[in-house]
Length: 124
Image 1 (spheres, helix red, strand yellow):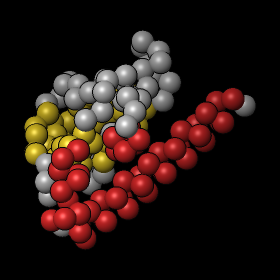
Image 2 (cartoon, helix red, strand yellow):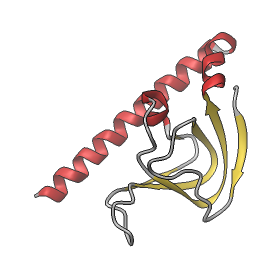
Image 3 (cartoon, rainbow, N blue to C red):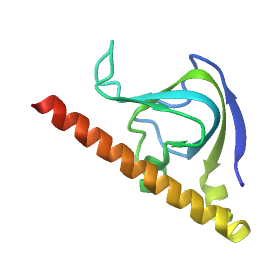
Image 4 (cartoon, rainbow, N blue to C red):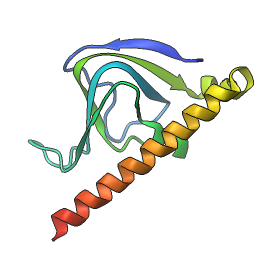
């Protein structure tokens, strides 16, 4: 897969809310925590990101700024998919490209559903 593997250690912050998006991550091992950071002491919403899932795909594909801050909860190995690698992937590995697109869309849909449910529950 085009991209580069990178190690992150507990407490590191791979990216922050509002930053420009230049890649998304596929988590190989470890654990990330993504939160919206609306409150200083506790985020309004957070998600635990586990191996085999992605992080940052929505702003990457929509070409928008990061919507969450991500912190490493357990030492991680992640694969960073940058724009040039994403553009090469279908030419080099069409099946992998399709599967990664499918998984990313599925995860984004699940995240949006969870956020909507959380907001609706809090509004009651």
